[in-house]
Length: 106
Figure 1 (cartoon, rainbow, N blue to C red):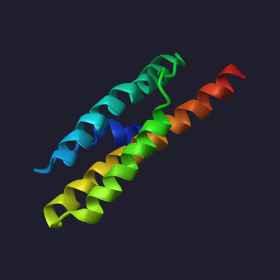
Figure 2 (cartoon, rainbow, N blue to C red):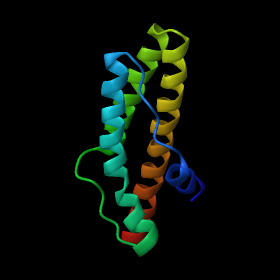
Figure 3 (cartoon, rainbow, N blue to C red):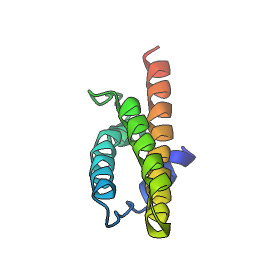
């Protein structure tokens, strides 16, 4: 629940000047949309996971962010850290959602 609360209050990360940073931010927005299915579960108990493999998608995004951070300057690294933290938090929230939903369904 703490991860969920943090995710809901955390501002969406910005993108940097590099095209890859912009693309990653776009993918984070898509992942964020998938993860919003958790809100229905928390507020109404409705367990309906998103159709794509959200965790695999987030893992791929996290890898891309790490590569971007390794190859960028200080500004790019700062933005990459922010994007990485947001993606990692969504990964925790969604994985716990899947665990809780599986327990609920029983």
